[in-house]
Amino acid sequence: MKFMIKPLSAMLLLASSLNCYSAEKITIMVGGIEKQIYLPAKLAEQLGYLKETGLEIELLSEPAGVNAETEMLSGAAQGVVGFYDHTIDLQARGKLVESVVQFSQAPGEVILVSKAAASAIKSPADFKGKTLGVTGLGSSTNFLTQYLAAKAGVKNSEFTTLPVGAGSTFIAAMAQGKIDAGMTTEPTISKLTSSGAASVLVDLRTMKETEAALGGAYPAACLYMPTAWVSSHKEQVQKIVTAFVKTLKYIKTHSAKEITEKMPPDYYTANKQMYIDALEGSKQMFTGDGVMPESGPATVLKVLNGFDKAVQGKSINLANTFTTDFVKAAR
Image (cartoon, rainbow, N blue to C red):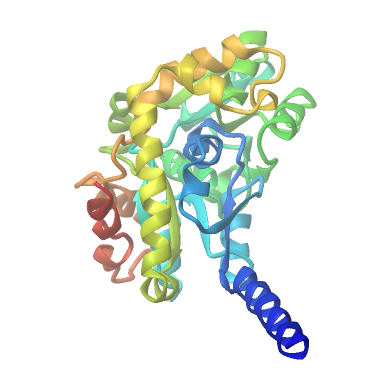
């Protein structure tokens, strides 16, 4: 009898061990997890919604969306919390990825001009001969900067874009005079404007300002994944999307102060009220339900066609750059 119990126990332990490792770990890269434009990612974790999925989900951060995209394409991550425009740019390059839940309908970005260059840069038409900071070459900040310049009649060859990341590295680049202006997000915007080190040139934090500058709603932050992975992991994708839809609803129904209370203290460092005020001013950029704005994809394609040589002249099937199936099921 003892002889039979021992191997049975061993078998049960082995089965339990195998079961622990049978669940696939899902890594999601975030293009700067501390940025308020990507707040739904960390907030979903803080609220416990990602844990409720029963999946092993890890959020990792890259300072620039283009770096997060590279990690996904290499297979090191299953998804990216980044800008929707990458799905179009990648399709033009022969790679199929799609947004499965849309976080925002406006970029939430701002072009700041340094105090030293304020007298010389009054609009994007003055970018000629200047050095402009972006999070990374090929990033969405780079895309939007190039578009705003082209719209103002300035060719990409007439100014320099310098990858300076976000947060402290962006602030340092501006303080050291390495960039004359640059595109960044909250809470970096408030830190620089409150100190007088920079001023706002182009504001894309609200729907009204975005429509004026870009010609319509500009779906930006989202969770995008390789189409092939989505097709073969529908159950997992549904659980993740449902968690994010719950998070977006939380954002819509709670104040900036209540949301900030849920975030890790190091996200707002020494000035909590500044973080709250910044979030209050731009909270409307989030969709509230995860649905892709109806006219949004066409606006993004128009913007990319304005300067992106990879997209220009290509036949882009916008229907393949996003799906609303998982969001509808979550609702």
